[in-house]
Length: 113
Image 1 (cartoon, rainbow, N blue to C red):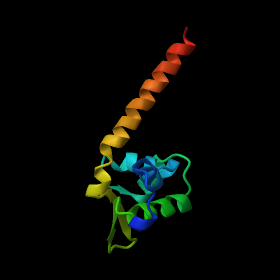
Image 2 (image 1 turned 180 degrees about the vertical axis):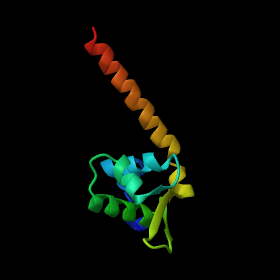
Image 3 (image 1 turned 30 degrees about the horizontal axis):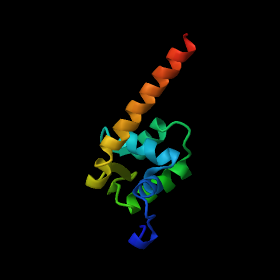
């Protein structure tokens, strides 16, 4: 976990530092709809390798943004979900989605002229 002293002074830089890589934001996007198993996340986050998914899930868990629940079954079942802190990112991710949609629409309108 990052200590308070290690965080950038800028709050935007702090947010980008925590969730700003390509994979983390897509993992969070998919967890907004509810708890997911590792395999579900691997299928829904197109192009991510097993190692990169594992590394990003561990980082998000360490930062308190997601939680991992392990079920004592054979084979073991692991589920990931947003913590309360992670769910507080919902409006941020929704605004990113709205902006992306508006941008794509604008680009399509430009090319159709």
